[in-house]
Length: 223
Ligand SMILES: Cc1cc2nc3c(=O)[nH]c(=O)nc-3n(C[C@H](O)[C@H](O)[C@H](O)COP(=O)(O)OP(=O)(O)OC[C@H]3O[C@@H](n4cnc5c(N)ncnc54)[C@H](O)[C@@H]3O)c2cc1C
Image 1 (cartoon, rainbow, N blue to C red):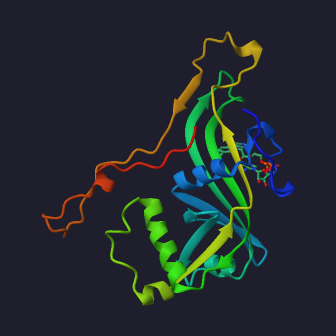
Image 2: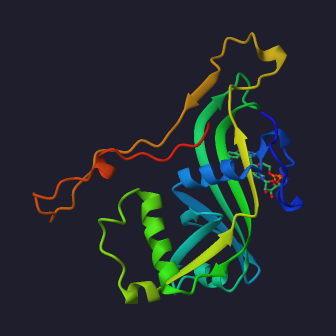
Image 3: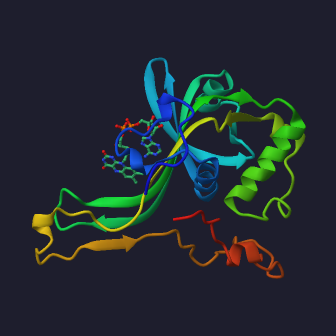
């Protein structure tokens, strides 16, 4: 695989194994859309912290949300520098040597400063999109957020501008001298598999499980 397109800045140029870097917006969007969670890195009073949370991509922006009381959201809405990372794990790569073991993955690193979303209408649209990012079709069934719930929620937008994808695919890469060793080598593919839905205890028996639950899957980008 070779690097596609060019990074928008040196800060997001993949230097370690550059051939795995990909700066194509469609590739970056597909990874962001498939990933259920992201990790957000900020520096708080000199201390780096990386916090897991839910994200959604809408157009050319990634949105994060949370309680008004959240340190993470307060830092982001004030325009602090952030790094948003998502990781999709596609397989375990078993080489003959311990040294060349690896993983197949698709990941995105996004750098930038956030924009606080102020209008109730935009917030409401983003909150619907967040629900549908996690489980497509759910926002149409769920009770809409009240004005109080919207007011209690901070929403911050990040442009997908300075971003990189890094992708590893394929078999292990062993050294020539190890190729004849009698050791199994190959890839164990991994993916997200939903279990059987468990209805809430107090749920009325006449409420059927929606098809978006029984047939749950993530949107799939190219692997
Ligand atoms: C599941 C998984 C497991 C990994 N395991 C290891 C491991 O055990 N050891 C190890 O050294 N590396 C591992 N990597 C690769 C790791 O993410 C880094 O790419 C690598 O360590 C080089 O880091 P660096 O800061 O030197 O990268 P540099 O290439 O110097 O980073 C420069 C820029 O490239 C971009 N970039 C770097 N890494 C990524 C990435 N993963 N995704 C998107 N953009 C990126 C960022 O914009 C970054 O600012 C793993 C990656 C994944 C997804």
